[in-house]
Amino acid sequence: MVINMPWASYRIGFEQGDIVLQFKESKLLSISIIFNLPDEKPQEGWEAWSQENEKIRKQLHDQILRDEVGSVSRVFRWGEVGSIADPKTCDASIFIQYK
Image 1 (tube, rainbow, N blue to C red):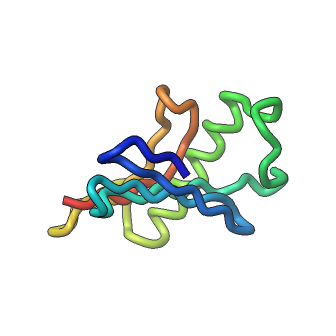
Image 2 (cartoon, one colour; image 1 turned 180 degrees about the vertical axis):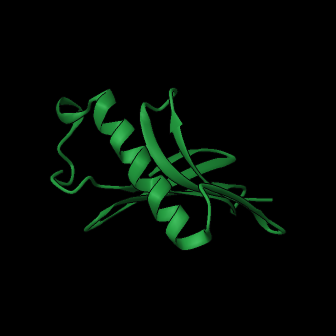
């Protein structure tokens, strides 16, 4: 949990990866989903990080979105869903951004 009012974020681990919920003033703004790679152990830490793994993770996320929503990025009335490789956070994730 990180709180820097009015912002707050919460990380929830699950068997296949992590979910990060981001709030502003108690309003849910976005959800990030980071799936583990098939041979990746949960919580391996930064020593296991590599740019190549994040590229593979991005491809995994892209395929999940194609299967579930029909494309890598899709805009809805309520917001947007997509796959991103973020150079600031050095990771790849599926994002759900609310309007």
